[in-house]
Length: 104
Image 1 (cartoon, rainbow, N blue to C red):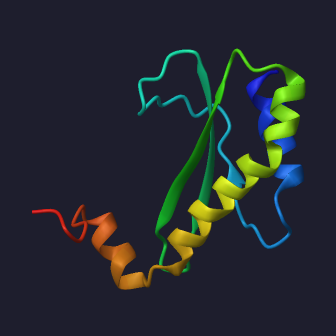
Image 2: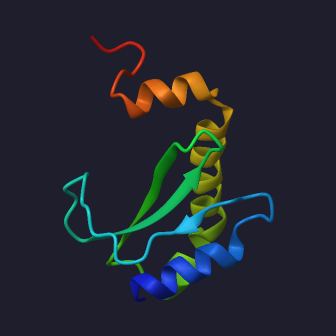
């Protein structure tokens, strides 16, 4: 299944409460996992902070396996969005400045 098709299927299956924007053509590979397609979304806050949210899908998975995993995949996306949105704007500001709590 193509990346764009995967992204569209995920967007269609996300709950209405989700407010994620697809990032088309975004090709970063932070994990270094070869053989996985990484699908990227963005969530933003009124304080102008944006979060990069993603999931990985094994390229070996069949279309049927992907469809069966959609509830889990959309749950992971919404959980990441919820974590970002649960942070207050002062935390977002620290993130923008590269000052993550707990790091030195």
